[in-house]
Image (cartoon, rainbow, N blue to C red; front, top):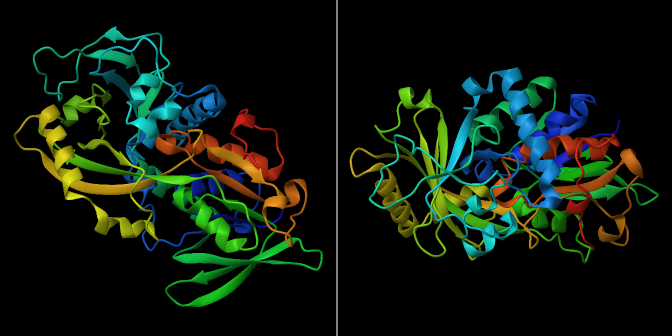
Length: 408
């Protein structure tokens, strides 16, 4: 089995390494992450909402596979304790929509993800006890614990990475891939990695590269293949978030289950509120495609908008009441998105790598891309890792991802 280098150690990257290591020596897998802090973007700052059947037809099988993998892994590894895996109920505080929007449009017009729920229809429900009610609002259950769940994405990412490292996967961090090299047949043969803290460079012999750098994937590709005129069709969507604690959400309430609350406060702003195991409540919904992508994920800390934070604080007060809401963390992350609204899981054709680069055929080599998951990176992470491992290793696929191919 050839050496595989994975560029980007977010949840998609570590999931891919985790599943690759089940069928090849872990020592033949290398993870490369340039950010000085691991999981400093969406992998650590996302909501952690999992759905089974909220996806368009192109991603439906991947979404269902991933939901099952989350359940299976949590049962096997005590996910409830280690990363807050919990069955959930999703509710909407918005009027029922007869003609639901495709989830693909979520990142384009500020719509609620709840409009893509694929359950049997909304039904009147009981609001979670922590939710502050106002006269005239209506609670509608749109999915129950059979098709939605909740995790803490940072804890899940850390768990997967630790499993990889314990198995023998090499982690290069902080480090950056700066160039590739070819052999006498112009085939990919190695990749040069620069360790940013020691200013040392090393060449890793490899025939397979998997780009899982999220919103930074186009920059990674352009650096490694400077003679290529092809640009990866992935862009970024910035999103602010808060994690808060409230006396309204207690351990006693946790025992009765977590909730995902989707609401529409005003046009273009659809807050999402998730109660988590461990006493935390996550609040998000302010997204912007205009925020420029920083060089490194950690650079986002200095860009957090006070206006955005205050708007989210206002939502916290609205749904939790005025008293004793403690802000635990403010966040800004950058989700990778595509124009189609669905992720790309595919091998990048050799013709896109430039005139002087080829790769070995089939499972012997190749350059691959797994990015563009938008708001579904955590939910689809395990399924993506499993399928990408199967693609790279030339095994039968567990889900049909043919409609998630790279268009060239």
